[in-house]
Length: 228
Image (tube, rainbow, N blue to C red; front, side, top):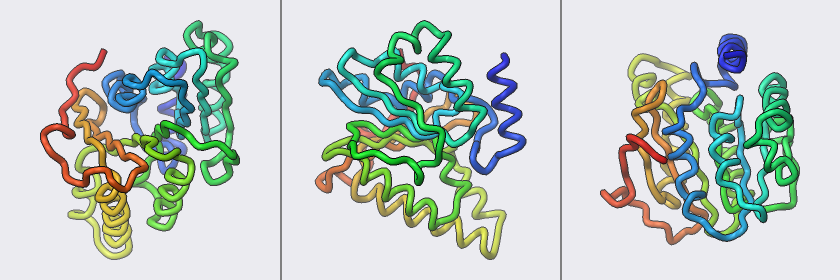
């Protein structure tokens, strides 16, 4: 309850960088970690914008002894909650030696590593087109060859906003469409529709491989009802 209150407080104060009205559901967390579940090799994972740790909880349960998890969280209060979880929560404490937490923006994050999985909770629809373009460039710079990027956005938010706005805001949203469509056309792997979340969300999975199929077929688009 304390973490839920903290989330709502940060949403009110910093909606542009929080971008949500509630922590991610377990169904969304399951969809975001879909490809991590299937990978048996030692892997490096980067979670960007973990918030209070709703998706992180799913990730730490899946971590194997040889895996590495790095977290990047801009919000000081959320970073403090995550630090406390790694001290006090048994499932988080189990992997504390495999995990690092950086309290900074993605643009300020410095590493020489590349990651097999980049899992992002950043509220891309709230940012300028220039920032989103920069963020995607960083995503793919940090992804190892054939690494998978998983990110989400709330269903129909951008299309609805475009209908009810004009001028610079509409131009911003159209530019976001073009940027995201460009990356999906080259790297699309799968789309999950997660209805059991507040609000419902799309999870986009992109692979750092130019041979990735671009079209969405029944095999790579799914509605998520429950994920164990």
